[in-house]
Image (tube, rainbow, N blue to C red; front, side, top):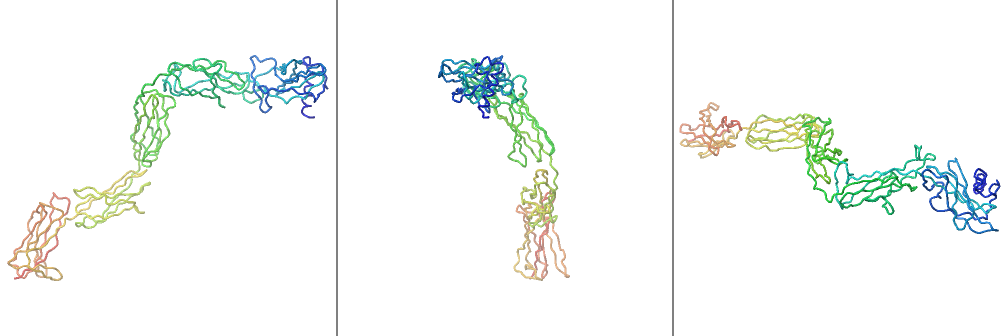
Length: 585
């Protein structure tokens, strides 16, 4: 059986029911014929004719009407004195009820057909139409489908962050002429008794748009704002100064309007007062353990603050010297906030908090430093000798124990009375050692320094090495030279005086030097005399002389000793080298 025949059979069956009196007499016959030659009615393209997959929406009054009326176009020719009339068959898609309606032929191209089928909120309905000429029906039209939404949307909720409603806390954050955005939200309720959208007979058309007007209720020509799938809309506008009321209604797809408009009353100032400059106080622990949670709390003055405000947090440490952003901290309306952090890097952790400002508060920032614990690092330093000749090479070795990510040492030298200077820096070897050399000229303190790393604290170690003074000497007053046993001897006349000139380095002006003379006989050197102290001159020089009258044909040697006093703690006492001479006639 083809589809048109199926629809016609259904129509004939319904016409034989309780409402048969409303239809032409011929319709009572079970086999009322279909005349394919009869032209079918034309259907409207408006709100009553959608497809079965995409029904249109229509609203109904409350309480719902006892029937429905549709308009169809019926051909007007008269055949044998009979004028065509329109017949409409309608049904509830859930199968609960159906009805038919017709009108006798009337002048004009359009007939309004009433069908006594009650319409219920949330239900889906279908209908089709035929032309009847008193003897037969045309093939029915393609069916039309529509859904019924008889419930009005809920009253909209209106919000605006710039202009709080009158009577509420807060002050305007914008002034006249500045753009501001009002947000609307509403919903289209399900029919009574429905708990789940989309269930059979539980349909709602959904919010379509908002209508709004300023300082009057929306009417003809009111502004419109589309509603999104969540029932939200917005209006961005600039306003004049004064007290205003924005009225908003919600309209669903079926055309239902919320029963009463929402009224949002607010004040727009002509201009805003200048923003205040708040103070920002931070409270943080002086010390904290690495890997343990710490809390930094803060207080902004000049409250209140708008809901949803935050402060920005930047933390700098050894691993992040330029700072790393922490999550924003929510700001309470009273200006308080709290920051929780678990530092993984030891040393100074600095927390810089910034409030970016708003229309009534200027931007402000503050910092707080926390010393986060680190493990102790083992550092040592040694020299290859406890003391050195003046200008001799000392070898210094520094050692670094276990660390986390830092393996660099620095070695410093500080001569007695001088400045501390860096002499070596570098990465220790696989044994933890760093070696260097230095030429001390006086007592010198050597220091090894570890700058610390993410988990180990800075550490230093020091050692001190002594240095001898340098005594340089030379003979004068001789007239020749000779060698004995490979040694250089100066030759003097017995009538001359041997003179030993000495210089002590570094300058030891005022300090003591002694001269010692030895004579060679019996195959050995024998001390002849040792002088008392001679004070060094301002240029750190001195000399000693020997009369040679009774020293003919003898071999001698002479040297000087620098003898430091308690005033000189920079150098040790030192003998100069022997100077050899002999006496001839």
